[in-house]
Length: 66
Image (cartoon, rainbow, N blue to C red; front, side):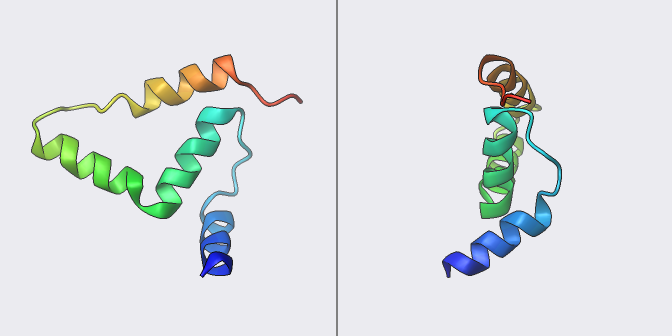
């Protein structure tokens, strides 16, 4: 099962991460967490869950060295 998740994760996430926020977004997308959060926030009537802003903030605070 682990090998399957690794293949899905690598296949769907070819863009290089700029920081921790990008890595978390890749993980949540590969596992389906992002999809669930999007549907729940829409059902609750919230237009934006703040994921993009949180990703950008984490990238700024914890960047990967070049």
